[in-house]
Image (cartoon, rainbow, N blue to C red; front, side, top):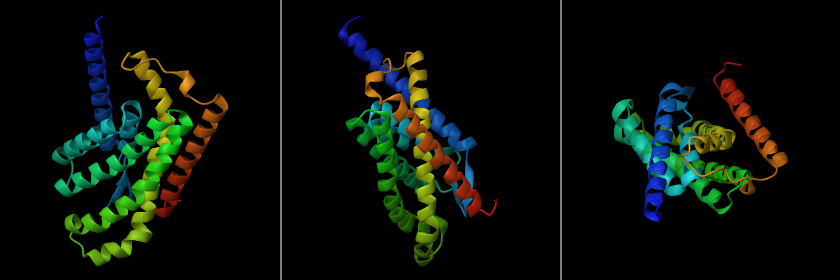
Length: 224
């Protein structure tokens, strides 16, 4: 097989993989949307977009973020362009930050560090955009939104991206292996991962974060 053919095949596999992941992100956004507080809800699409970023870099994560936000806008969104902008910005900030950090240290702990960085960057960025955009599409005074920033939007954003980060860590290796078996990406390089003990520790911590966030949401909603 010539280098040109090999390169074309690799590009095709990349496009197929990103298309599949974008479709999954859209589907989970539709069927796994859970109310959190007021009009705010959670869906795990950002975890899938972050996986795409880990596999193919920040640019891939940005493209996926825009595509999923656009399709959501023209199919199920009730906030039209305002919601699309917010969705694209939030997904892109979280997934691109995580993917960029991971590209510098391609290990399971490196992925965890990237996701923590994604949460740390996205929370303040989205607080700014919540303050800017929510009054426009919710029709409420900006002063009302300002009073909601700390008691409502801050914990919501922390929970949202912490859950997405934990899910990404838990899904990263299984999805990578599945894509390898489907011959959609190169064979998984075990030399790029950390020891089994460290991987297990990362999974345990991610599970604890996920469970803790879910329990907090249930408590916040008065369910437990």
